[in-house]
Length: 190
Length: 162
Image (cartoon, rainbow over all chains, first blue to last red; front, side, top):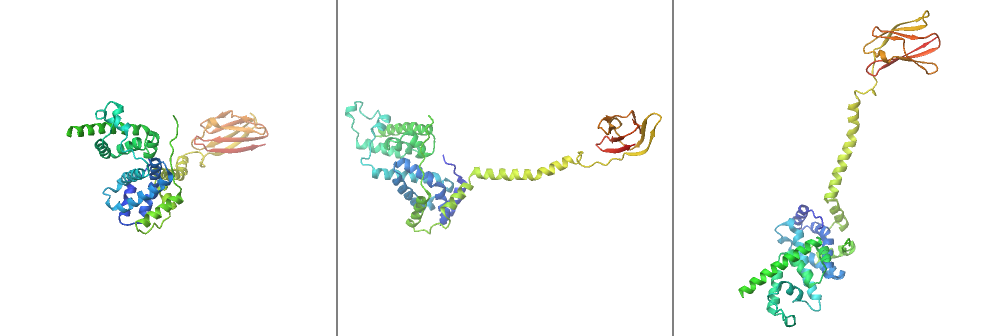
């Protein structure tokens, strides 16, 4: 993980919130390589990553006054980064895998017909799965989307997030367990 | 096993262009300090650089105060000239016995350390040298360099020539 001085970043955020352009530019200088690396890994296209970089910081500058905890700027920026990349990826994919069979098979073998030939994913199942994924903790959400919807290798996910491969595996295992619980609960409610 | 994961990076020119586009899109005055200057400040602000800076200052202070430490240590060392109170109060040639006799006075005379050197460099020790102050060397002719030390590192030299 990149070495950020969060206390110093917090002070810069407070200045940027008061309209100081140099402070925002310094925040950009501290974080842009980390953000670009993430976007390039996620989108697997350096041109798209440059577009994403711009988009991310436009959103950051427009919404910076809304940050309640300035020291958590990097985590907040990572969330924006993920959302922008996710939306960009959806727009650019020719067929968006709303329903990822591998993921469904891994987490919901109780809901899918055990006869693989008869597997039909209902719109309702796909919608619940997507909702469940979006309600996961941010780190788990990111790795699930990158792994099962973007077909990224664990090493690439680790490089994008700036963490170790074993951390990525841990997030995936935890995410699968959470999704199973959420979908099981959802099924009981129905 | 040791595969290094790829890290993507963007060049400074493209990064700067993106930043200017961000300010333009948000209709905000752009930055007045260049991206290079801001990047340099970021590097200077890292823990590693700060730690290195303080270590360098500590090392410089240590180097500056080192000579003072040696000075204080050396105050009692023999490197600083030591004044001795040894004096030769009398001397004569004892021709009957072929000796040179000298009478010494002073505090802390190291009688055991008294010696002389002949012209050819030979070291000659006194026949007698005791607390009474009398020192006797075998001598008939030639030159003798006589060395009389004290117990605090001081030394008196006398030259005898016949």
